[in-house]
Image (cartoon, rainbow, N blue to C red; front, top):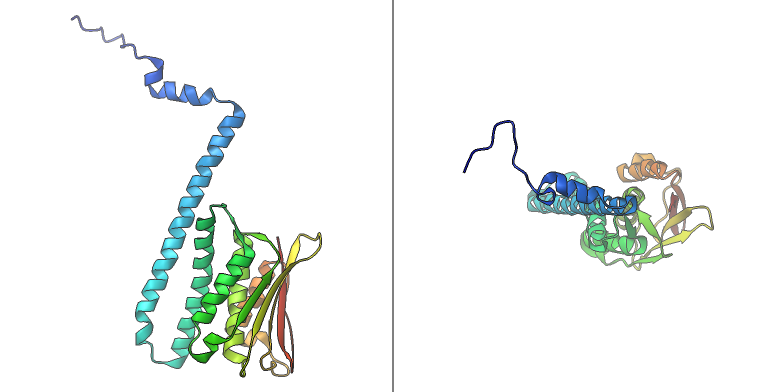
Amino acid sequence: MPMLPRSQTAYSPPDQTGDGIASGVSGLSPADRLTARIQELEAELRELQHRAKNSLQLVISLLKLQAGRIRDPDARAAYEQTMVRIEALAILYRQLHESGAGTHVDLGRYVTALCEAVREGTPGALSRVPVTVNSDPIQIGLYEAMPLGLIIAELVTSCLHHAFPDDGWIRITVRQQGGSGRARLTVEDNGRALPAGFDTTAEDGLMLAEALAGQLGDTLSTDSDAAGTTASVSFPV
């Protein structure tokens, strides 16, 4: 069989080359191309969320391996506080991955799981203090849920560690605020009142909650008397 001259190229059918594939894609309507691109980005987002979830779970497992070696009370308290914060993010990413909803989670479900994790991670009898959650049906975005979850974790931890006599309780409510595009989180307990002139910036956890409230466009408000303590913050939905 004679060889082709160097100046000539062999013929290939269009549908068997890269150009053929590109032609097939370019043959889609603009709406179909946009749909395909959105599906591709959603798949990439789910994969990133899955990796974040696994990475946070690995960090939690590694930290738990060191728990038995901590003897100093201050170091133990710092360890427990760190675990709560990581758990708040791990639960969020796990629920995002499970829901397949992209960037939003059911806020009531998230808060319930978070409070249960905080309570179970509290040593001693305080882990039996009941925590109830009552939330309007709200789907919240990832970037609002992260600071809000950390605020809840800090407030519930503070309640459990500092407030409680016998027969204590913690109640969390989340309510829509009319048509304002915002909702309000309220955390209440029936524990001991805050000391007169209490400065929230004197405690690391509450100072963090104050800073996170600013990210949500509000300030953390607290009110305390003999009946207990109430803290609240609004956030965009």
